[in-house]
Length: 99
Image (cartoon, rainbow, N blue to C red; front, side, top):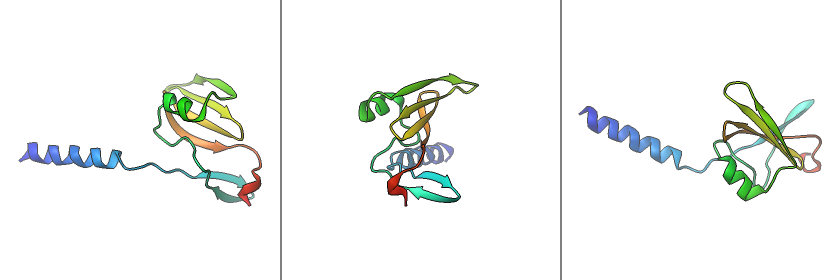
């Protein structure tokens, strides 16, 4: 019975992992405003995928700490990585479409 339960748990985890990931970007200037970008790097995306979809970043900041946290800056937003995987996407500065 425990083998079947383990198999069902693994199957459930696989199904949940394959669901599409979505992300919102939060701008804070007084009161929070959630900005939906067209396409953006999402949590868990590998850095190779980010490079393939969004191109070379304007700047790469070296990893610090343990686990290693690094940042890539693109035009108007930054992508924060934990190791090789996206942790967050953060909008920098004022965005005209945020209002």
